Length: 367
Image (tube, rainbow, N blue to C red; front, side, top):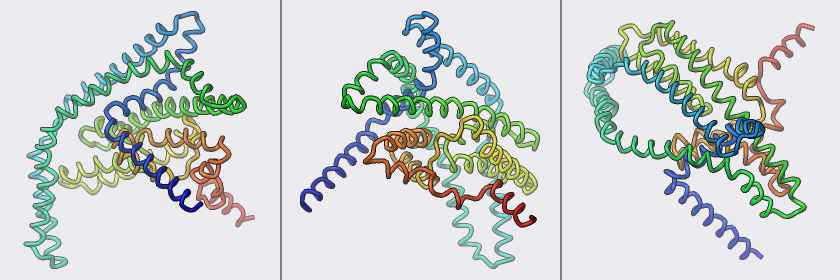
């Protein structure tokens, strides 16, 4: 019995390893396909409505895809026109960085007694890694752009066929399961469709709202290239926890390097992103996206790390909805239900820290 268990475990680990290897090697095709699945869920309600008006399925799908391309393309052109005025002189940035580093070096030498030779060595290495690596990155940009264009070109093709063959795919899934499991399968598919559609549509709206809030706030503060930093921070917000931090850190680093007196501006940027993050977590996302995901932060962080290892940034963007779908499937299968409970946020409500709970405790003390 032990030998059989060990063999089964080894076989399972081998299959998982092969699966992950295939995901990595075929990511140029699988990444746009995975993204297409989520966009297909997003477009489905509109496609289904047009079909109910008597329009043929293929034409309905093409109309929706064309509308999406026009909207995204129009927004992209608008942002590109604004970003075309953005000028960042990296040679000048390097000179300013070296000047700031030299001033910091003198302060550390006089106040703490740091060895200037050692400090100069590390500062030079940081400067080299940040700015000289930019030249090599520019060299590899064009090959990366070619791959990205290829993946973007696959998106509408995949979306069209996923929507066109959605009925056939559903019947295929029904043929895979036993007849007695068909009602549960229908329930899972409907729940996945509802959660995915609400999440994708909600997150797109959230990104637009955050882009406006971030850009307006940075513009009021007086940060150069406010639109670029605001839009970038909003897009990075699609990556939970990590994206928000990086999105706020980028303008902070830029100001630290370029401004002669950066302290006040850095504080203002920190306050701005703290306020926007508070509004996003407690007001914007709960009311627009809803609370259907309900996954604990540890599971999200682990899934982000694994997704980054396999598919990079694209994997981190789709990690949360994929985890939500996995939770729905596991919750409806008796043998896997404990794993759904493990990655959910259930069972920890009494330990959570929230403004509502704090307010209740304050009122309880004063009564």
